[in-house]
Amino acid sequence: MAEIFNFLNEVEKRRKVNEFTLLLERASRSKKEIFKEEKGFIILKNEFENFFASQMNSFLINEKKIAEDIFLCVLYVSSLIKKRLSNQYSFDYIIDYFLKGFEKENPLFFQEGGDFCYFICVFFPELFEKRGLDDYGFDMGRFLYYQFYLMSEQEIAYHMSRNFKEMVEIGQKCLR
Image 1 (tube, rainbow, N blue to C red):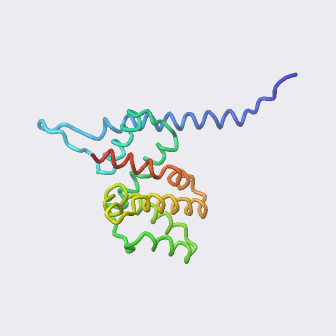
Image 2 (image 1 turned 135 degrees about the vertical axis):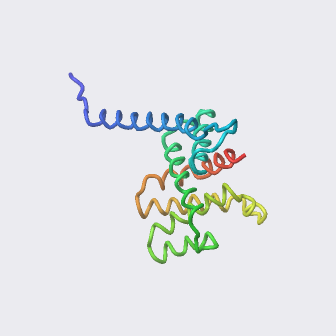
């Protein structure tokens, strides 16, 4: 008896492979495009978030941590860093994002809270460490992104909640 071939499933599989291939190509290309040499000096051509994304991509490739969800998170994190460096935010405490999100039933508060947690965990980890709250930032970041995912159904929120700690660790290694 003949086997039934589902053409649509095969098309979807190929589309995902092609998207992942494009992510890998972008990652390997980004390192080359980030610096230029001028009068014997190596100069950063682009903004910091592009440099940071390039460092993260290089780290992932060198460590052979090649997974589509991680690369998607790197793209998200680089845009998050640009947003964080160019804007001021009114909330001083992570819990404010959590409370506002539930009070207003607005998933964007959870996204901003997750972004804030990521930023603090990567750039200022000592804020949690000196208070004996080492895992607080990780737990709140994961929770805020997951709540954002539940309310918005945005795929990147799921990936960030699932890979939050790993993304923070990668970000910290890239800053060294």
